Amino acid sequence: MHIAWLGKKSPFCGNVTYGREITNALLERGHRVSFLHFAQEESAYPDWPDCPEVFLPFLYKSQLYTIPTLKSSKVLTRSLQELQPDLIHASLTLSPLDFRLPEICEELSLPLVATFHPAFDSKLRNIASSTQFLTYQLYAPFLARYDRVIVFSRLQRDLLVKLGVKKDILAVIPNGVDEKTYSPGYSALKSQIDAKRLFVYQGRISTEKNVEALLKAWKYSHMGRDCKLVIVGDGPLAASLKPFYGKEYGIIWLGFVADRQKRIDILRAADVFVLPSLVEGLSLSLLEAMACGVACIATDAGADGEVLETGAGAVINTQGVTTQLKTLLPLFRDQPELTKLLGKKARQRVLDRYTLAGNIKKLEQLYQRALQMKQSPQLSGFS
Image (tube, rainbow, N blue to C red; front, side):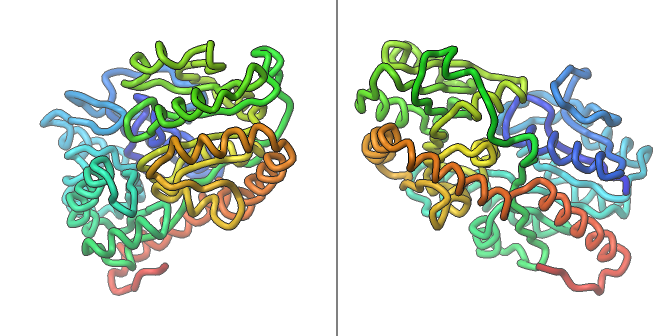
């Protein structure tokens, strides 16, 4: 099968990781993939799939959204006519082009599959989550015109159904990780940074990720000289936070780490992974930590609470994150047997529900069904 993948290659975010992992897996399973993305020129990127690329012109792009040029839809249409794929899979980039895709695909008689990424807080308790809810409201009428829409959790599915998207075009296919690549193993990081207990955050340093709540809790908890908190990632708030939360508190800022093996080594060294987000979709960073056998603490934002439910980790509320972490951080510091047990349960949860192989199998079934429905519209959907 030839899949035209429309997604992101930069700047780094969960959407980029999703596209890289899925397209690599599709290629390994013998499919053809053409990667269409917003870029001005080809750029080197570690572990990127070896497949043909089409560069779509843009005016601006960020981790959150993209503004294409007026001619981008024409470039996309012409490219699809030349490529002649079997279907299009759009890993939606929060771009106005997302709204044109159903029309373009109808003109070309191509099945259109989308993955809808926007994070959310199902309880809609704050301004950030309300903004995310507006994104869902904006997208719902257009998603209804896609042949299939992939979401990561039943919470996302139920929210879109409430907004008018038919349930039979929505498929819940959670993110998956390669459990052989992301696995427990030896790492020298603890000895390199002189730590006996290591806590890790990995992700954007931005408002919705609520990293300052973790930093405050760490600072107020007086974790001791033997404990270190490693922050992996970059973002708009990094420069304003670093001066107040530095090495004097056992906090180490590593910035963005592009090399996957280095990120894995960090996770293998970790005792605890903390994700204090206010809004989420389904965090790949969380799944990667779990696959490496790390005990995890995460808020119930998005689908992360589903991932850790019934004992696979500690789930906290998005309200009062600092207060909750001030209780949990010393507990996880002082209870190594607890963290080992939770780490084992976390990895088993990934093996049971969130492997990349399981994700790809469901995706292939969805592709086949989308093709059949395009050829025979009278066929009903499937769950």
